[in-house]
Image (cartoon, rainbow over all chains, first blue to last red; front, side):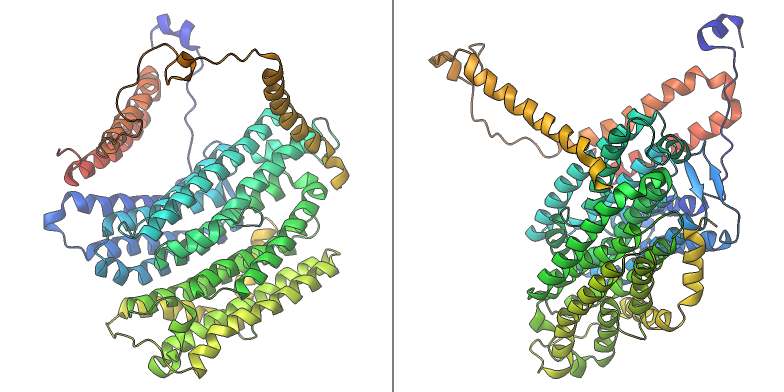
Length: 496
Length: 117
């Protein structure tokens, strides 16, 4: 290097980051798969359409394996402190990758039958999964923002994927406008955080924030409130839920199935991480706010779901209600009581199976020529007994019925609330989840006791049936064998 | 405790108050004399041509997206070129990976017919 430049550029040599590639290996696997899927478009005449789901599935399975083998490892912070792979991020990585796998399984027939560009669908889906993983692994405000956007923007695209369907277009427009709005609020919060603390890394922010006794406390509070509002949009918490029913109803059902679980998991991971880690010292300030949000979310979601006559829209409101239940776990967090957060993690995992299965069953009905209205499920048991049983398993799971994964999920969260001194909140949540029984039982009664109204076509949906079977079986089996997953969630929540 | 949130409320009141006060003051203080020239679209006096709601070719969005592909490439190539001799092979591999991804995007656009008019 010539001495001519040293003056201008400084004599210090550039320090190259030493990235830990194993820590980001699930993301690398998914990126390679996404690029390969698009690469197949380049070589289109040579390659047939069937390879797209195969490549996407291979990438997702590889990512799952790479996440699983790291489970026992010590926490790794890499990329100059931007990225943290620990039990927490791996738990969410596994959750969203499973959501991706189930989504690929249930989407295949919808894509081929509706002449939807397959390569783009899978590439965009994989990008959203990558974004959710980045959101869960981010240990820095900038990485967090990149992750949230990488997760959200693909879901706006996926929502509008039924290009010739006006409802889908409308949903995509609403979702992207409100999503952009929420992103701006989140970014404003991140800017305030950086402006006050002068730091973007979580540990440094935590050091500055302390326990809220230092200066600039009001500004720190403002920052945390804006972050809660911005991420509240993504998890569909009241009063930031306005987009949810329209986006969930308008989006192609397979897309709703995917994004209702994956975006929620990714955004919850980001919210838990930033609140308990960066803003962990001022939990006394954000905890009451979250409790209020949790209560209104549970009340609105559960009550409005009762009056819905469209199962898809009903499930959209039910997903708002579940956000409320999960928020109870986070709201009652304190440094000595991390049980609530392990409840949130377990809930997100359980929700992946139950909710993806429930929306997936609606997609199955649509693939057989039915709609998503409440009448369309009439007499499903007499036409397709297995489908009716699987659907019922998922609905019972969402209700929190014994012998489904929904029960331990709710119990862990409510127990944490009671243990944290919020017995009244736990009782209120319990009461509101009993309200859920009203609207979850309604389609079930119609499935088993009413006469069929719609004649189902009978195309072969083998791949889809496998996906739905996994979701329904997962809902039931995890209801009995929940302890390994819960142990993992507990380890993740306590920073193992 | 929620009590400590009052500065946030104050902040929003100040923000809303500033906007409201500015608008109200300019309404009260500023002179308001209407004439025909002021009602025109361009106050500079240029007469507007055609309709306000014109259709523009939707295909321009592909041009915009292709521009982003090359623009981002250029943005990263400049700082890389500046420190190229100091980051050596590591930087070269990184940049090749990056460009391969962008070339992939370009080839994809080409195969999807983005360059056909």
